[in-house]
Amino acid sequence: MDWAQAAGYGAVGGALVELVIANGRLLAWQAARHKARDEKRRRMPPLRHYIDPTADLAAGLSRVALGALTGWLLHSQVTGLYAAVAAGASAPALIRQLGTFGSVREIVQGPAPDGDAADPAPRRPEEVGP
Image (cartoon, rainbow, N blue to C red; front, side):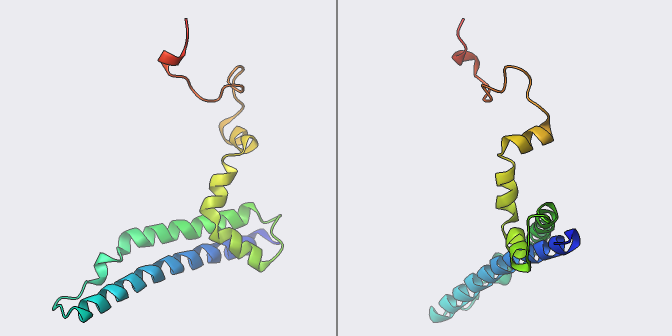
């Protein structure tokens, strides 16, 4: 698949996930309003208690960008529209998983100095013997 198509479909996958999240928030608001109506309360819960436009927009844009990035990174492995959308939808988890692979970590951070490869976790001073 062409890299631009894969990035575009990946962005669509990220946007779909964000729409599902927004829908969940709207359904929670709807349920709260129904509950308030059933309890005959005067004040209905406002939408702003369930949606924060600034934060939600920033999170949505970052999810779309991560979806596009994942589609671009995996464009040679992605063979179809659905695979690219799925890669974009799962972008945060995919990128997090890729970061755990040693070869990817070496590319990003550089090779580990001698002696550190066998013991990657830093030791606390009390664990180190004389």
